[in-house]
Amino acid sequence: HIAEKEEYTEKLNAKLREEVEEFLKEYNPEELADVLEVLHAMADLHNFNWADIEDMRKKKADERGGFTKRIILDES
Image (cartoon, rainbow, N blue to C red; front, side, top):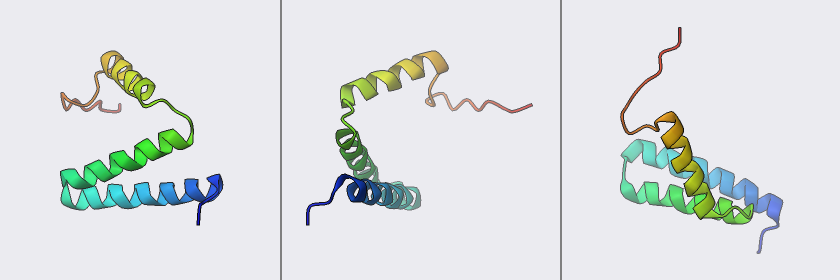
């Protein structure tokens, strides 16, 4: 059947959890690709433009440093 938006959202949420857990078990690039596929579907569902999301990611990384340098901010 073709899912209505509410059911589709629930299924995508469950699929994202599943794919993230699989990636965390295996650290396999195919599992990471599956995570990305679900994220793209979620963006489409909510009418988000993927290029805009990528721009937001880059802007946040520029402003906040991102994760590539492995810096951990310790709480005091």
